[in-house]
Image (tube, rainbow, N blue to C red; front, top):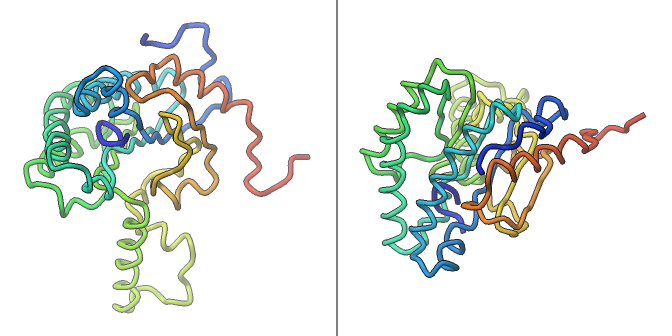
Length: 254
């Protein structure tokens, strides 16, 4: 999914911003449809992934004007290793080139970048680039961009539970005091607010093991637009629709 792997350009000045509309502060996106976008143009799937990577930059640039302070994107899932060796290798190369090319621009724009997911299976050069990008942008605050790379929510919860179990076994945490807030502190996203809105492009209506814990009270938008066609104008319309929703978090509106 994403830069990547799942299968305009500024919004108009008269569009209602996320802040004005009571819009979402944290938006998470399952960026689906790159492969189909390419196939409809009789191109290889990697052509679509490159187009999707270019779209990421435009959506990142649009966020501050829409009142979005946190953006989380699904770039590559733990299940995406099942794809062909050619596609996986091409995606890994794309991730490396994207980080090398975009580091300076992201830092100049005040974007703080974080990566979530299990880095063990990723190659050393890519991990080094990820570490460097996180370090370079660590003091930025105009937008918090989180990239889910080799990420699966069930895997994340399993890893978090394992770390929590070690703490309990070491006597640093009392088992009777463990609750949902305790576990949340061990998730990859422990420093981030939960998403307000989760968007999936391409017309598929499933969440594909993405932020299962964190999105318990998120609003969802499943839209037909393929990711490379997800312009900032389309993004702005989705943000505007969010402002009309009644979010009660299990309570009742008086």
